[in-house]
Length: 122
Image 1 (cartoon, one colour):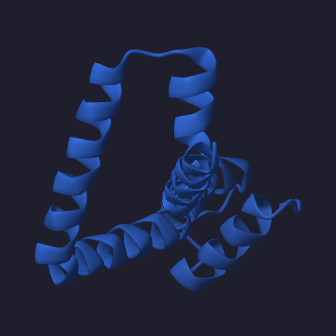
Image 2 (cartoon, one colour):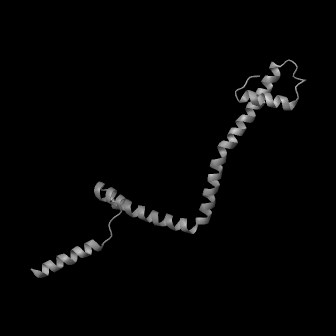
Image 3 (cartoon, one colour):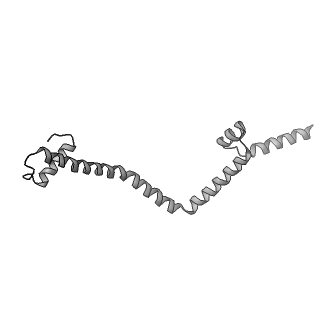
């Protein structure tokens, strides 16, 4: 009887020394019961991805930086483009509304068009 108790204690020590499964493995593959082959493929992909990231960390950092810069500046460039097209269209409208458009110089026409685009009147 004592030998059985010793074996059980050794087994419980071995079982407690094993690392716990991550929560996502416990949830998806133990509780839900997804196939084990998916877990193998997922772990292999995770290992390969980690190796690729470590091998190319500077290239990935530059790519992320470039993507961030483009993402940050695109709305600014788009707004400037829309503002320029509004000014071009409104300058034509202002010329049509004002009878003596030849008298108005370009700077004044630009100022009136900009004011018109920003919600002002002629």
